[in-house]
Length: 252
Image: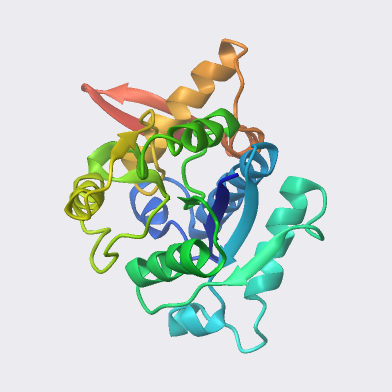
């Protein structure tokens, strides 16, 4: 059984998805709500999959000073998202991330779970790819039976998920283009690599344009959509228009 690790930040204004407030009509508060919605959808997909769920969150000590709070509410804020997504977070495992960089936090978590807790495989998700659902998590688990590392590619050389049966050298492993760097590290360790379908990760204004268009189309076609993210798009009246051949996100 694959352990699904969802990396989570407290959904605070300015901390999460800052480029959305810079590049789209959304405010910093809207961006925080967008992150909260995508994280909820990711947690639900992970909980519904055949794997186990671990929520790995950044506490106040790992947050930039301008976004940390003296009363230490980070865990409570992440738990609130999980409770909204799952109905209750009482049975969900939560652990604090360890490490000063993203690479080290992922590496510490994956290595500990594989080597110290003897999990057969670990899938790491950031919670910013709402189009990746339960079937994709289960697909990763199936591919891990034949490959040591499985990657979910995204636009601009990013990944929406990375799964491991064996640790790699994680120092600098998420340098751009991430999908190439992770593959190179895995092959350097003589590990077999496989890939999942491409899905958008949502970090920039262009990413949001793409996700909004896809989800509006899927909803119109009566297909499955991530409910929290789709509700956010509807509530904010987000749509995409073409202006001289360029796509632009607007609020209706």
